[in-house]
Image (tube, rainbow, N blue to C red; front, side, top):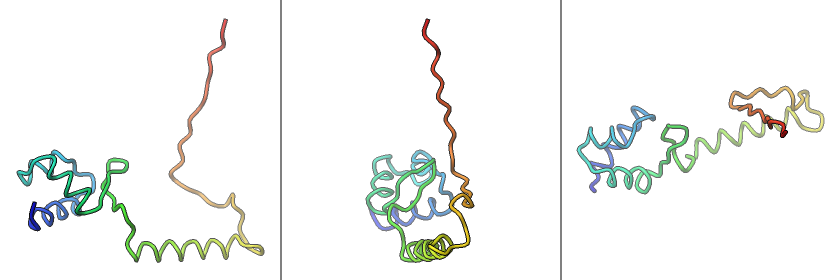
Amino acid sequence: MNEQNIAAVKRLVDENRHITYQTNSDTLSLHYPSIKTILHEKLGLRKISARWVPHKLTDEQKRKRVEFCQTNLADFGENGRKRLTDIVTGDETWIYFYTTPDK
């Protein structure tokens, strides 16, 4: 596993975050275990919701999260102008629980 292969895998993932092991393997003519090692160990990526995301946050991502949290604290603080119910998220999943009655 050389630096060229690592750079090639990184380029493919950057171009398409939904790329699969098989597509990587076919495109670069590398074996599946090599692709897996490059993605997980060398690039520090993992698959979440069929998308490759960095396992560790960059300094810029950390800074943005801190800024966002500070803004929220100011808005929702002791004299804040918003309520917790004012937050709208798009990642909710509703799961209904239903038990069939026993006879």
